[in-house]
Length: 113
Image (cartoon, rainbow, N blue to C red; front, side, top):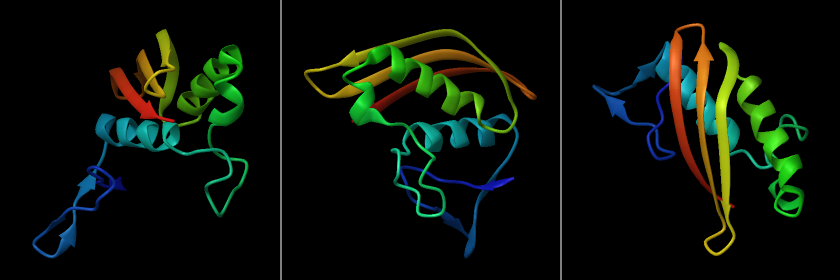
């Protein structure tokens, strides 16, 4: 179980945090992993995606993004992966089918770099 996040906010219900579990928890943790920039997390500077290097070397970025998804607890595999880097809007669009311990998850993510 994890604390539910919505648009980087922690919604409350009856004065308490809402919780998320199962496939929704995995989806949330993938979103957090993809939005963590390399060096941003104070407790472990090795976590995150090096977007600065990756935008110059897209094959590195694809490898790094897949590894971040695979690193989430409960993820078994990443299939049908596509990644499109919109250089005009500095947006990375990711699409994949993620097999988890709870079933398949259709991942659609857009990250502002």
